[in-house]
Image (tube, rainbow, N blue to C red; front, side, top):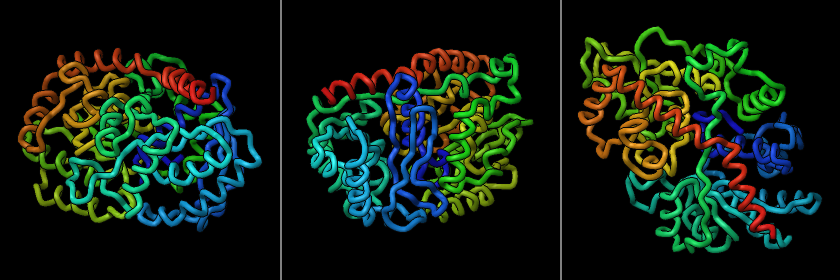
Length: 418
């Protein structure tokens, strides 16, 4: 429930919260069960109408690094088992590998169907970033393989992820469904549409449920309130990189490409996000790179923003840039499209499903900064093309709402629950 872009929070968090809210609107009762990693957390807390968070005692009441998470699997399994004994549970849907490893024995003991969503897979030992994120602990690849073999069903976020699970872990493709992420069409909308609606100035925290959820996010994971409220307005041509500051995400490539653009008309780059756990040095490297490549570069670093703040920032930019080495989908690409903003992204993984090449943006099959700079330069100086791509992106995004995702998940759940 952390703010995406902070620490390890990202697309998984967006998927989990938005799908839970929409599932509840369909009449389901959703319980989000996680570890208590802050002393001030209650045992139970309502998040949205019909969605309740449960914080279980499993390990220290403080955040731990991903590399230390494996040692908490056993105590979390024990706490989850106790919780299940006193709860009415029809389906257990685990998100990410450590949740699955803990939940499968519990599901088996209580004869509850278990569904797994990975959201990302660890790269094989010795592989480069193009194969995905590196395993943070020895048990991850073993755990992911075990989950693939023993879950009742797997839900992938893209056809790419489905094929990756099959190829890496020899999973049965018939046992894998695909439910791609959606987008909040109200929050992520063209600025021109928002500004014509009454009450736009108060849109950010409208609704009791929204305000309650935002408050929970900030308190649960310690998100900086100042980061959530940084003004998103821009006063000059701007491009945006948003996400965790992690080598996998490739912020350094954006900076290198920016340095190759015409200095007389080069846009400003805003990098919004915070270092992933254990990668503070990478943020320092990116900052050093900005300094090394010249004083003419205009690069601003911002903390992670709320969903509303991010939508406002993207909506006022020329385009979003996503140079990640690998993504199983790339939710932010569709969020930018919903804002009517083009995307320039790497032609890799699930991003070929979240960006329609030359329709909603451009996919680049290279990590050569010169290639990126050429595309960035062209799009930055072609407002008609940006408008064309943006309009097509909005139409594309409107076909993928979280209500659609909830209906797809409902059909999957009902099939497993019999």
